[in-house]
Image 1 (tube, rainbow over the protein chains, first blue to last red):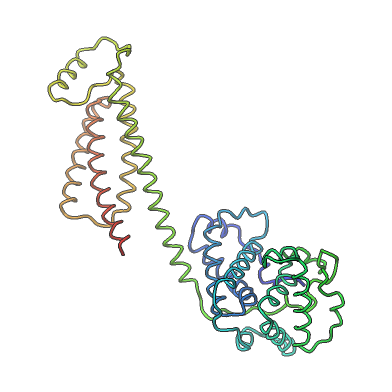
Image 2: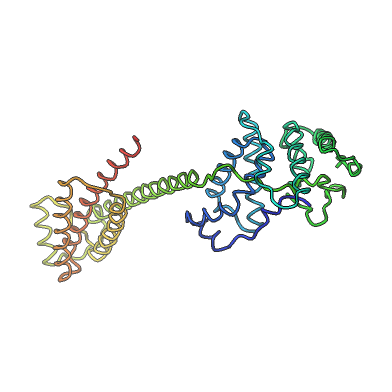
Length: 190
Length: 197
């Protein structure tokens, strides 16, 4: 599966139209609907809770300011998600790290099957342990669906850089969560 | 983004997109609600936008007033004007002008009344905007405003009897301009105070 399904929710057209006209209550509705997924994505990308909070705030402010430019020919969540990721990448480039994401951050958000929770937390922790570039490359490629060419543009490097980093990041993640590399044969040569 | 969500493949060569299931990771709750900060920024944006619109409106209106004024003042001076022979009222008005030194009476009274009415309407609109943005006013200014509004009301009474009177419409426009100047001054004072905070 690609991407966090939480973004993929229907937006009430009336609310969207009201928000476009600057209705603060409608903006709040959109914020309530999407602030958790936006924060989650920005945390995964930045690996820093403080920075992710700032980025989430900036992303929503930008979104509400530019809502008039949103034509509605693509889903709102996709537009908002892209905006949040761009803000997160930009923030990573210019801001010093703050408080890193911890095990507790994930535990507080998990509910349900204990085994699944354990695996998710392992993977979350493993992701958090990756270096910044590796984490960003694997997240952008595997979750956000960026192509290697697009990732290369983000970093100002070549596609080979993206492919190498992706391969390395996946390998490291597998090592960290203790899973064999069975599917990695399909790996990062894309 | 997420271009190949349906088949789970990369799209560049059909390989598996998310082999580790990163996309299935649970959501994380933000440690605090950031809505109040966002709301404050949006509210300030709206205030700034409103001020900008008002200034833009005033600038446009000022240009319009200037253009209409020039038209009104220059119209009678043209030597090639096919002006009709002046009637008794016009002669009387011209004599009065000579005494008082006021502006010339236009050769095309009908067009002028229309323009004055348009100016009057424009000024009413501007005044409405300025009134909305005026939080408070010194007592002295309030008295002036009341007097000017009283005079406008009197002119309106007279206009109800002679709705085509250029003189009355001119008076109305002048009174509205005075009113506007008062509100404009107050608005600029308030805006300057806000800007200095």
